[in-house]
Image 1 (tube, helix red, strand yellow):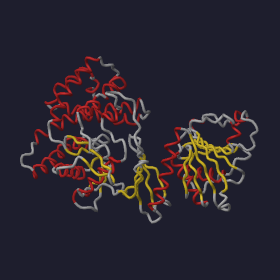
Image 2 (image 1 turned 135 degrees about the vertical axis):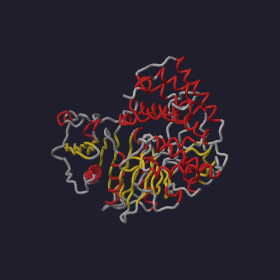
Image 3 (image 1 turned 180 degrees about the horizontal axis):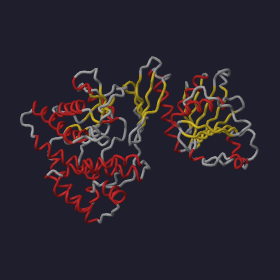
Image 4 (image 1 turned 90 degrees about the vertical axis):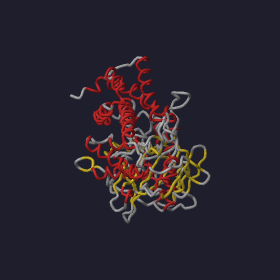
Length: 514
């Protein structure tokens, strides 16, 4: 793929040779989802079957897959790791009505469908999820060159822009021929791929396009703005530079496209802080000591992203903490506890939390990475000191109380942290802080830890209920009993007696542990 000319929503790609066509197939396969239709048009010999076959092989993860053109069978079905894929060749179809007989449009929303000669289908192929690719011979290079014009509706515009920008960035960075493997993402809209060069060198592609604004829910702002969630990839770049300037092991950025939201970053590896038997205490303690070291610094609130481009680290303010706790009222209460709480009860909830927030907001703040837990901690035994703990997923960092990140670690949402280990982490952190400041108030810190532990687990209970009910991701409910247990643990602190009474009165299921 040597050229990209955009006009009226069309991407015009000049494919210089077969290798460029294969790269286009890989790029498209990486973004295809069930329900997508790839409509391949062009004259005989333009390369429709070759591109379809290459996409099939990518989806099947089988470069030797036999995928003959279904000219005579019309439709061929393939079972792949990405689901069922249909390959149709409609050259012999004379009427769109014939599609009813061959079953092409049955369950099409659950399949990836590749269609050659799509014009023979008339209006039978849904337009919303359709990507049109018109292929032609390149008159400047007729033997091996092809020109591909790609266009799609609203649902395709960003995906196409990302795919094409990714290809350009990787080619320019010298990673164009790397093998790309999808990595399991997180609960956000970000996506990740592990890239591997022929010599075994690897890197991670981070795809994080600008966050679209959701509906305004308070003071004309969407949830993401109120909760101070990163809206662009600038936040990751800025925090990455800030952490690396302090000699922490955040990944080196190898290439970037800030406007599209793409980063090629150092691959810190697979080794985490969890072992076969759960948390590895020594690694968790090393992470706690890293936090203590971070919190002894006076940290900037404005960080550079690029030339004349800065990122302001937002404050973890009352509005952000409050809207997070209210997720339990909106999602957990009706969908998990099965109760609808009256306005007066919700107002009492807000009043109690407001008093607790007063206490938290009165304390000095620091960088709060916000998701400082096992999925985002990489163990790097070959490095020295605090560099042994690799850090990822810190783009939502805010200025908040130093206890928040230690809570994220000690009450890990993805794995059970025994109470005894949690106390070891508090002790390790407190010892390190007192080593720098004899006046460090460990009892006051523990009080804030309990308050923020209750706040964080209240938020997560609501988020996991939302992921199940709204987003169709019930897997997160498997973690809910752990979150409820952490919440009960925090509510035992005397500072939370009033809050505990509210939960006991209005969400009693939290205390049903049988």
